[in-house]
Image 1 (cartoon, rainbow, N blue to C red):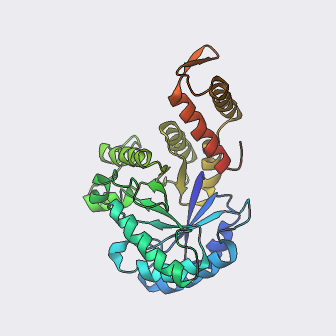
Image 2 (cartoon, rainbow, N blue to C red):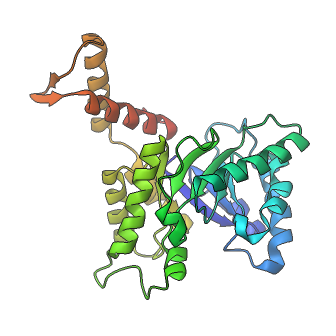
Length: 297
């Protein structure tokens, strides 16, 4: 998936409007965008919305739906799961995850609610935000083999800013400072180490289209498979830049075909005057998988 749009779970209007946003995935939020007094209302609205528009067998072309629950430290996670698991969302987004053990804990909680709803254990995916605290950032490499449910790792800069106490997470030129570049990097490395997809964080200046485009291109360059959005206007840019070009797809197909024709006992091959080896094959396969997830290729 390329675009992940956050939608407040307590706004019926925004929930239904999000269906026409073009986002590959809707992140229905029960956490930061919902005040404490609105939590129960948000759970009810989210449950009804997911029941109507999601399910594990949702129609092709409709957005995947993931629910962001409150963090394990809040004491509200289990109430969130009790409200939404039976509605069969595609996944649960765990915020402020501080270690792979947090994903294991969440998975166990989800299994209880799946059993209560007569849903097969493990069908609901997990996605984790892993750099929203200092401890989580230092533990970004602990997610290997923690749960078959876990599909993506994402990073976040705003909560990390508050946890560390920084004045700003960007330089005067608009680039991330070293601390946040580090958080971004360890998310990429942690995801790659665990065989997961890495999803880039939100770009908060949603009216700055040029800035969003630059950040999307940098994310594609560095290996992120998608990007989160905080406003529907960002979805088109994210989808466009994270969609592989036809030229890139054709080259990936050529590389795969080249290795298929050469057989298993081969190391280095030549394509268009360039040397091609196994890492190029792996990159080609990942590109085509990303294209298929986006409904192309």
